[in-house]
Length: 329
Image (tube, rainbow, N blue to C red; front, side, top):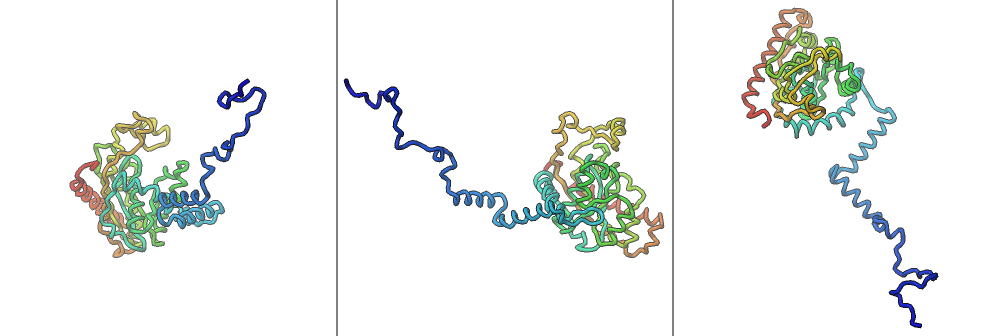
């Protein structure tokens, strides 16, 4: 009887012999043959790609930062300002928005004092106060100073927003806090139009609203610090406000409930700001050190200085609008 060939398969009841070239589970694993040195080289290359040449130091600093956070080993001032968190994370998060989305162009940054107290007074617009955040970033990156914003009551009543505002250096918009910070040499930011500015209809864009009673001027007069007028063009177009629902806004405890061409029609997508071109110009400081603190009680003087600041910002806005080639250019 002829022998059964190998091609015909194994003889029934007889186990197949193990092949010399059989594959083990280790060999079959797709990562099994990669040496440790290649893993380390790949991680090193990834670090270079993401963090640059100095990635090891940056990673070590990041780990140290989180360790301090977990251990509670960090400093905040009496207002809750967390300098390190603001510098490392808030500014870093805002920077690509400023540079890539709004393409903010800053002028007159030399008018920000290198040290000592000063009051930056700006127009306010945009339905959502994004202009305040962009101003903080511009001052931080170009003047190497932290801007301490004065915020409305609503900011400090909102969950999460309140905590973030405090940690980023904001405090309540009251004369007492403003004077304390200015006396300590802080750079303070104020938007006197308040909700009347950011909540005005698109048809009234770049027309300044009332500046209130001039409390910011009184604070500057009492502390003798310069007032730096700031004009911002571009924020009016990020959320063009074409309507409002006042009854629902009152129910929710809000100053207004905006309706834009895209919100609420497009839902969450309508909350993405339009990529308008921004221009910021810091004007020449208005000095107040020639006045005595007692003169801050003179309502006519306060009114005149307030009007001077307002007119300076308004005229600069008109100049910037003429210079801007297009809204989104």
